[in-house]
Image (tube, rainbow, N blue to C red; front, side, top):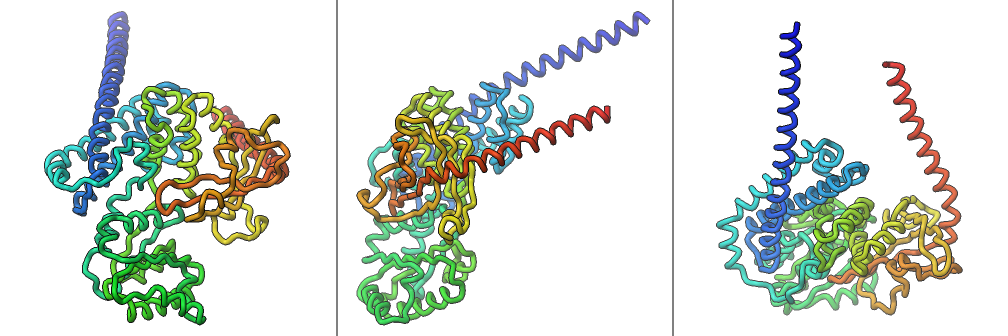
Length: 504
């Protein structure tokens, strides 16, 4: 019996020692992978930023660069999530994980240390493989590409004033515009709301190669295509120039269906007979059926992935500061980032980043976080005047907006609209940043707010209406709904626990 007990005890001790050794080796391996991932991210950033400073027209190189940029953004996203979990392992992580498209953050934040180490290792391997593929041919070919003429901005200024991650799509549009014309060629650009379709076209048209080739660029909407009235015929006469090539950028709303497409066909037929033979058309639309209007395959734009949006948001938020030196601010930024909706992500990310970059102190960032915490999306429908577009039907309830010399008050923001080409004097005087800083008087009831103004062409401005009275009316309803949801969650948890006890 003593021999048996001794053997069992020896086996238990041996297994315990092996377990402790494996856990120690695993932790050391994870630390090594974190350091390697940081170095790989720095190398990838060097390659991406150098490529963005050059005029790359080779489609295969652009595709390879796009893949590297995606792996770089994913690596940065996962590394920041891992570091946040390492600092505060008890913090709930489902918020960050709920929006990870690849499922990496779910395993990283909700799983064990071993799972987190496996995620870091997987991301590291894919990033290093992407860098290894670009080590020779890509770097040599990149050195032969001409440099772009621009000021030596630092990273955040470059991102704020240029498109992010659309280099391949931009070159595709430029290639379409510069290739020999066939028959009044048409390129449809299809994509969901607020993915940067107009911005992409504007940047392509502003390229020196395009400007040297075309004399004029005409921007039209669906209403401008009508040829029924004499006024429309007169307006179209100003578009006709048989002596020089022109670009027609047409924004199709996609709301009139067959009638809109019929206007388009009449317009194209009329212009094709009277304009320069090398003129071309670019169609911008959200509707997939408009892809059939093109003479070349359509260019489809997707919404940014969450990890790509995080990379942009972090760079814009910290400006010229180093995020690694301010880990507390990175954690606050991740919480704010998690609340960025999928509707108009670029506008919301830029708006929040501008508010954060204005004051790089933890106190200021917590104030921005407090204003953004508890925001509830509302479907206003016909109550807000029956707007047509989904983004105009959506309102946002802010439970705690700072007021001047008064306690915080709730507010509803609704009626978000977008305009381009407006002077600053024509826009609302109050900005969203000023609202978050508490400059609004307590007596204000309803006023327009400049949410954000883009610094890149076509310089879009986003305006919304702030309704303090509506916020006070909605507050009891939102509070009741939250209490009911909380009570339901509590009942579910209690019921789950009771079933476990009965089953035990």
